[in-house]
Length: 407
Image (cartoon, rainbow, N blue to C red; front, side, top):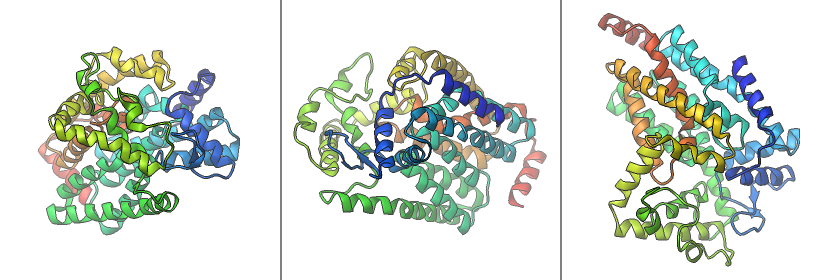
């Protein structure tokens, strides 16, 4: 835990002069509005300050709170976020210790502390800084646990908070359902997973109500981000031989779609973005499968040439050299994680939720995918890779493990 904090602090100090890029610019602006008492305001996308639903509120609120407390400085915020690294190491150790043994838990904790594709986000202004430990909280609550109504409610709260940080976190519900069906049977497992889903919706509901009160034109459950499909499902991405189905901010015809010279509400803009994507999918239904292949599988899991993944670094304000090191580690970790999962294939309490999470995450990121979006699942991959250090399970050992889990 101490090592993980030191690594992040060193990274922050060494890269403190980096220019804010991409979403960092948005979060910095929103945090400054927050510090000035204008909570969750933004100028996106029409350069007009207003109460915004452009992004999910979780990270903007986090950044705004710390800008208010420690001053309006990305560097100071990153130093505060360095304290999330020890929490990530602790949660990783906790989950690994429950699933395997002490050697695996210690190796996993050190692996996460030194893995650039995890620790670098604490030094940047991206929601993954919160999403990584928050997803781990859900996994600790769910995997290899006997579900109860109280646990289902707590899990729902955790998933709701995750949704307010990254709306794509709905894929966590699939992992919950798979884990609890194995632990408690179909009826009780799915019933308690439904309880978690309802509680998560209740956690999100106040934000949805806020959006309705500040924008009476339309319905925005969490953010305008779910209008991003326009950047993937269009003729330009389909015809791109070099980067097929790669999301782009301004595809051909974007000006006509967005009509940027005509300011309007967030809800209207969201609808204008969604409409052409839905029309394209209706006319080209197989485009969803193609986008799933290239984005949900290829880009999300980095099953592509390393150079393509490295191209993302500059746009996200990240060190290309550190990204290269992180990718080299990732390919090894992924191979070891698959081996560890195969080795544990008879432990359905582990395998079922892992596979459910992997499949639904791939589906969730079919619209837009990249290395950054996988970051909250990286600690789980590290745990599976480190599990190869544990003794191979025997039938007797598996029985002891199941009895310990029930008790």
